[in-house]
Length: 443
Image 1 (cartoon, rainbow, N blue to C red):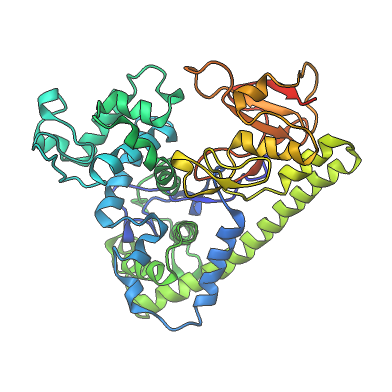
Image 2: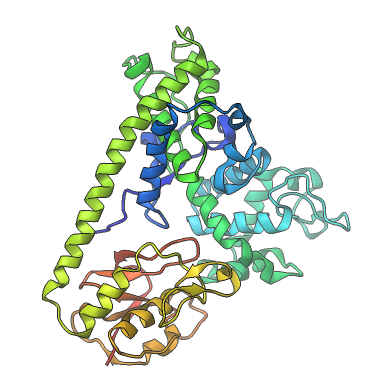
């Protein structure tokens, strides 16, 4: 059972998306898709439910401006940056590349140009979102300043890098860019992951040219209502203000897309109609997400009850790790005393990295294990039979390194408590996944 499946929204982005670059994306399938990684179901439910609370509050016209902080939410990107991020994510998807490629692309563009298509290097030889040099065969200046062309060129060269998927982000980006500052890409990794989670292009389709005759609530086609629903989910996951979503829906109601569905002659003013739609849809989503959150909590409580009969130090370690669910991942952060501030990309984040979490959990049980994953792999008894609660489960995610480089703590034979990566939080996940190399039972 994947406990976090179905929670956390990915906005499905089509080229030249409508409104604010985020909310109400043309071609969103099924009202939004849920991410299985780095999602906070409680925060999402609270955000969507807050849209219903805001319905009774006075409007703030300052939140309706496209490109304002409210419209761009926690991503802190303006309209141009959002558009270029969409291009990168959409290009990676159209080429059949995994989301990891999109994360590398967005992080690289953040470092090279801050996602600005007209950026020019100080020496006047590099251009565009990836600062590609025409003299090095990337294309003409006009081509490399076209974000779509630039993204295709970047990903075509990334795909030629042997083992790029297993490389650290900074190494993969550097293999393509040949930058004088190769370590700089890593500092954008967490932000890039957040952007890609929001702007994933999987499942994109164009607006249906032949609209179905069936109408739903508010006299709108059912697939249009599904897109509004997806917009609200995406906006909630990104912290976008309710009024910005209303403005987005109102603009879409005025647009030619809905005219194609023969609903252009609306009986009310667009913004007021949009407000009613957003309010009603938010109320429905609030009920659904709250119920889903309760179901997840029940499942988690069920897992914890499974340990009622597990005695000894393993049970103490497991319970200690479970109590840390929701704690941020912090690279280099945490120790036997609990969450702590990390180093590098973990600086400023108080939490755990993977091995600190397992070390902390077993310390609560009175057993000392090493701090680093590689050392934990050689500490204790290698598990030859079934995995049991408290076992350390190891993964090899970087083939260039000798030995496993990631670890989780088993809570059953199939589930583990895991501190996965920067931008995510401690959570329960399946043990069996690519890269699994084995388990160790601390002595």
